[in-house]
Image (tube, rainbow, N blue to C red; front, top):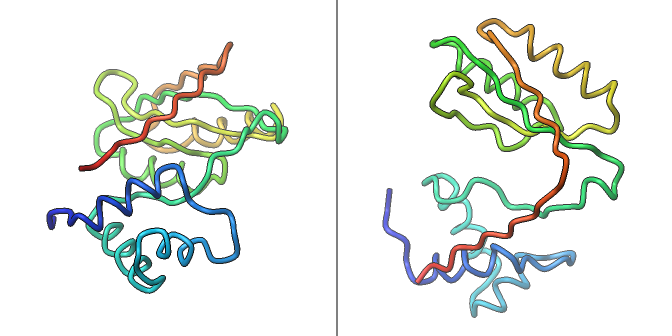
Amino acid sequence: MAELSAFDKALLNVLQGNLPLCSHPFAALAERLGTDEATVLDRLRRLKQEGYLRRIGTFFDSNRLGYRGTLVALQVEPGYMKPVAEAINLYQGATHNYEREGRYNLWFTLLSPDMDHERRILEEIRALPGVEGMLNLKAKKKYKINVQFQLR
């Protein structure tokens, strides 16, 4: 993994909370950073390939859009982690899929438009080979944490 340049750090800093909502957001970012759109897009591709960048996107208030979320913990047999995680990633509402230590070793969040949709998805996931247990941990109160890393 190559070391981040000063430009990479500036790009990642501004990208974390200031992606413009316009028809050419990367051109607007480039102007702000004193470069051109092609340079920004090239650097973003490389940062993604090198593992510094996972996704670019925005966060919406899912409740206001009519969606409900839940945190799900799975107990997955050794050797099944990758196929189970990949199957979960195919569901449009599944996010934050990550492996953890302990009995419940694969966690993810799921956004669904209604309880029937959520129930159906969780039943399908529960039936995947290698899934030995599931906890559906519904939120009672929502806390929003905005974490931004200032790279120097």
